[in-house]
Image (tube, rainbow, N blue to C red):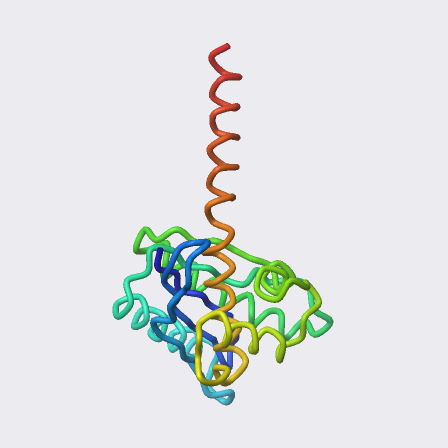
Length: 176
């Protein structure tokens, strides 16, 4: 399974591609950040994010895109930019028919470190260890994108089984 993780942000949008299956060693395929100038107009920044994500999709051909689910923050301005960048990533994937999964920050932290309250340094350290990297990816947005991809690879099999069970139960309810 090849997953593009996206840590959405208007100034720095972390992107990382991880390949593998749950229970086996994972491989980092690529990691980076799509940057936009803070003094550019919002529309131009969103176009720059779209172009950056499209480039990653073209180059790495992921089977899934995992995006951090936007949650309420104290700074409304920050959460709006994060939500807008998140929507661009989802749009790019949907346009290509690539399934999108949303994972909360605490879900990603718990999957990668064992604690939903881990700090960025702990996430970076575990991403480095899990992917057998020489050093933590910088900036932290890049490490967070890899953590999203790892989380999805590890959680997707269970989520798929759950969805199949719900679908089976729902279809039996309609025919019985």
